[in-house]
Image 1 (cartoon, rainbow, N blue to C red):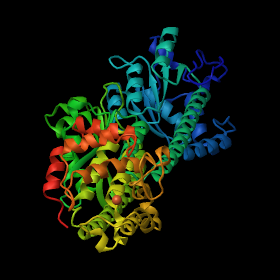
Image 2: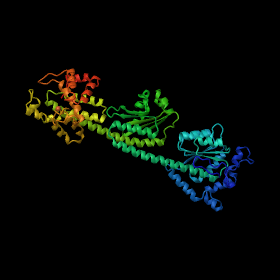
Image 3: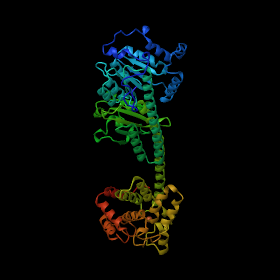
Image 4: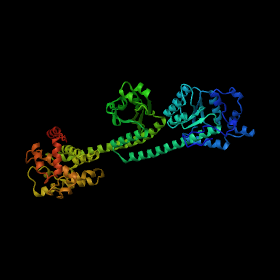
Length: 585
Ligand SMILES: [Fe+2]
């Protein structure tokens, strides 16, 4: 027997050393038309079948003092491998040869191995079998008329990417060997080959497959662990959805993904995030949850794998159908309810369809994602409820100060516009919003007589008023959730030249949040009526901001405010409306 060079190496180009009775001696002769004797009928088979029988029934073989193929110990090892090689079921073997007799002999040879063996002497039917059912290993003849062994390899690789294919041929040429190995065949057997050779090649192939699958499972386990960790590290829904889409695309080798949320109130499906979806496909049925498949998944809470044909039938006439090679629509379940669906699409012609195994991986991702999303949504609800409480508090302040109604809302709007211009991210924008709402919360500690006094404040009264930033920060300091708002509250009356209060900080000593709030707070104060003066116009207030850059205001912040105003990034129309009809208290 010639040497092998590891997997995918060429096996025996000429079997040798095997006893005559341990081989398929007639095959090559018959294929080449040189068979001197007709093939025996099964009942009349010669010694070759005696050997096969001995491997099937060791006891019988022992009783006849014949050589056992394999010895009983080897047989048990093989069975154990079978048990651990996949999902606990024996490997599915398919033998394809246009000569029925070859199929039968190989099946008999392998019966003792406890494989699930299926044979087909019709290669066209074999193609259908490969498409329709699980296949772990295929033994196929090379030349079979219209359908060749290479066609069998291609079909197997298409539907079972980790399947092992072993070619058998009676015409061993270098070209054939190269062709089949390039097509993805694991090995190449030359007829006649011995039973030992066949068993050894199959065993080696299945062992390689087992290791490959174990490796995949290990990678999946590591990957899922990382996903769980990543999902646990963020509570932000937008980050989370993006992470889920990225993970699903990467793990399932998809081209595009979309996440849709089911609105609990209206039961409508709302697209929340997508990745890899071309502009022209946004709004397409399956990506918007408006198709029958998505509706089915939401209704029954079960995933669906869609192939190209089904997508054509069920997705309708939309252009997206042209792009779907395979798709998975998977529900995201939380507390027994479908809270959303995850759509994954493979669009390239050359990629394989999604497999049930990949659906299983996605189910694990979807399960992790659903609980992370639910946590995130609860967090968002909590935030919203905090915001409502804070707004009620701010309204309580404004209710006491008849001259500053609507001030909080306007300051919030302008501060967020400036922060957006600075490129602050959503979490920081949320903090700006909190800061804007709460910046004057300390006025709760200022007596009404001072707060609503229409005359100029006395020195003592002004000193009391100057305490409101400190009073505000003390109100917030015991609430960790509100801690990011403290710099806005505490420093919004500090001046860049150090003449502000409560601490007289200057320049960079003043946190950026305070410098930001100072500009928008003053602008709104200047453009609002006071009992002792009329409101300035927007233009007059803008000039004042410009004039006071570097004294009262951080010059960069003043410049940013003026630029944001000029660019129309501060909604002047809305601001005007807010001034004319301040928020109801
Ligand atoms: Fe203030």
